[in-house]
Length: 149
Length: 153
Image 1 (spheres, rainbow over the protein chains, first blue to last red):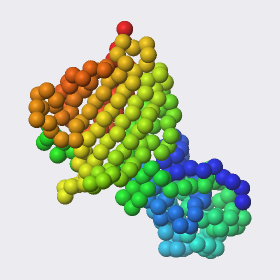
Image 2: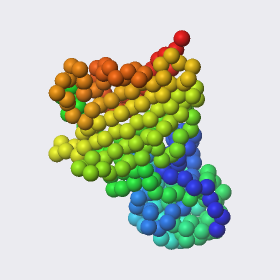
Image 3: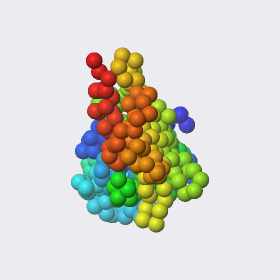
Image 4: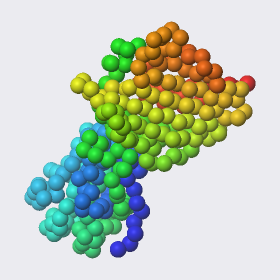
C-alpha cells in the first residue's frame, strides 16, 4: 500500500480548522488497530481544544443502513464526525459509497480504519475514494497520550 | 496570592498541554513565531504526584526564544499549578537580554523580598512581584506584550 503522509490528531484538526468546519471534507485515517482507541481520544480532545466543539463519534457497526440520512444530518454544534471502521462492513461501505454526498454535507467527516479495512474500502468504494480530501497515516499523540488526553 | 493559586484548577495536565500547544500555534499563525514541533510541550510524570509540561524552546521570527516548564500537582480538588518558569530570551538588538517569570513551588520565609510569583528583568536577581495567572495567560502575555516591547530603543 502507498505510504501516506503521517500525522497526529493535532495536525489533522489544524487542517480542518484552517479549511473551516463548514467546508465539506472527507478524510480516511489509517491507524494500527491497537492504536484506534487512543487516536479516537486524541481527535476528540483536539476537536474540543482547537474548535471548541464536541466530536460527533459514530460506531460503524451501530449505524443503521436504513437510517443513514438521519445519521448524516448536519449538527451545527458537532460539525466534525468521526466514523470508526474497526472491522470490514461491506454493506455499510456500499451504503456510504452510495450516499457520499449526504455523508459530507454536514461538514468534516473522518473515517478511521486499520490498514486492512482501509485497503478494502479504497477498492470497494470508488465514489467515496474520489471524494477524499486526503488519506493520512495517523499515529497516537506521544506528547499527551493516555486516557485523560 | 495563595488563594488565586488554589482557585486555579486545571482539568488535566494533558488538556493544558494541548491548549498550550494550540496557543503556540496561534502565535505561529499570527506570524510572531516560527513553526515548532507538534510534540511541544511534552508532558512527563515526575515523582510525588507531579506532572510537568516542558517547552524546551519556541523561536520568534525576530530572533527571540521562549522556554517554559510548568509543574502541576494532583490534589483532592483536582490539578493545581505548583510551579512554572517562563524564560523569554529577547533578540540581540534589545537593551534587555531576557525576562523571566517564575512561580516558586512554595512560599518562602520572606514573601516581600521573594514573592512566590515574580519577574526578573535581564540578569537581575531582583524579584519583582507578578500576579499569579493561568499559564496560558502568561504565555499570551509573554508572546504578545513582553516580547515585542521589552528593551526596544
